[in-house]
Image (cartoon, rainbow, N blue to C red; front, side):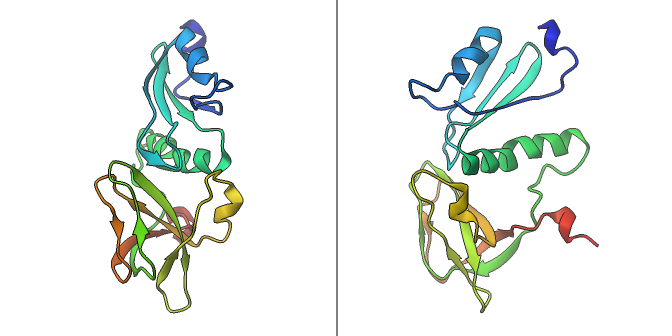
Length: 171
């Protein structure tokens, strides 16, 4: 516990899943605890929260897209709150009309990349099962589908977050 005394937060990336080669959980538990491992959030379901000694720990998936989403939705918000900033997402929000439906299983929240069309409406972009970061390289925005929802119908107005941070958008 002494070795962590000068650390405020530990962020670990990778080997967070449940396969034979995913060893982060065992290593963390040898020196601390992983209090919550596995979240109903796609694409970063293997996200974990725990501690080493008294120091909070966030375990991010190793997949680049999952890691980025997990960081933005969890770690960055914690850091902003600790530095007396808003714990809201760093991205502005606005309402746009959806061109195609988004389906989501009940019980699972979904982070969905979006393309903003020339007419201002938004189209969901697919995320392949392997979740490569390149799959969202052309995304202009994202939306979050709550775990209690089955998705959103085509033509509905949804809250989107353009991929420009609040800090980039401010003059």
